[in-house]
Length: 146
Image 1: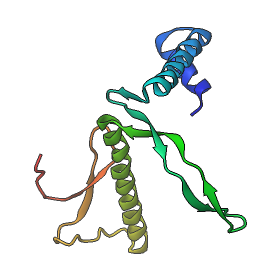
Image 2: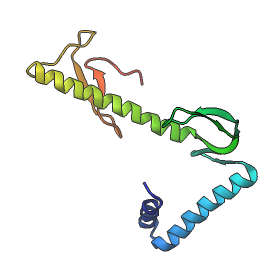
Image 3: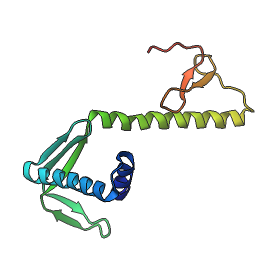
Image 4: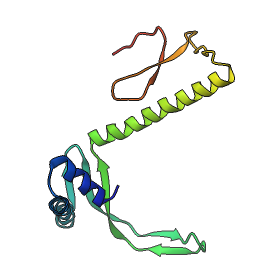
């Protein structure tokens, strides 16, 4: 996603012109940069922490020639995501795993003529839709611990 797309989305959601929204978004980015330069750290709750750190000098290799080169120490910006962002990104793993399982089940069903394969417990495997997510694998007849 680009800054222009962010501006367009916010503009549509809150009813401001794209020009005014762009100005606000840019001022926000400018404030983050200025804070990093002056204070070397900015914490945005439920988002994450940007921090300026000094990276030590090191030896590296030019990938094209294989020649060893010296890289001087320098300041870099690091980012550590907040808890909410971390959890939402980890949810991608769970959704991807569920999709992969569904795909594998569908491919197996195709090869076996549609028969439902037994699980390791002897119960047929089924999928139960959960609010806000793709179908998650569940064992038929098993009770949830939630």
